Image (cartoon, rainbow, N blue to C red; front, side, top):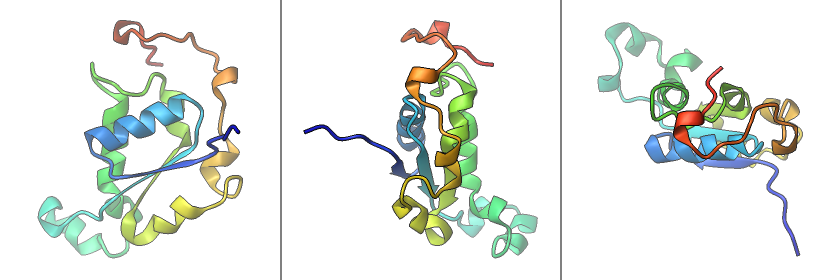
Length: 131
């Protein structure tokens, strides 16, 4: 009996969570990566005033982890295009996205598969493509 993974949810966007999400996306699997809403001491005064209504601020931790996964010498995304199928959110507002059936979320509609990738495969970090 074989199973096909059509979508994955990663709870926590720290170093390990963002690496897991990056590897799954690199295989063509749409991912929902969730983290906590930042605590007040993690935000500037201006952000603290907007945190209740501004989705960008509420998803700040997951967003910054996704950016870090694509940047630097230890980039975990083999290709920046893989980030297109990683959907971010937070536990408070977006936990239901982890239960969404495949095909009904935004990220799965534009998913690419590992068979259709147009860049060379490599396991060497020195040979990673960053375009």
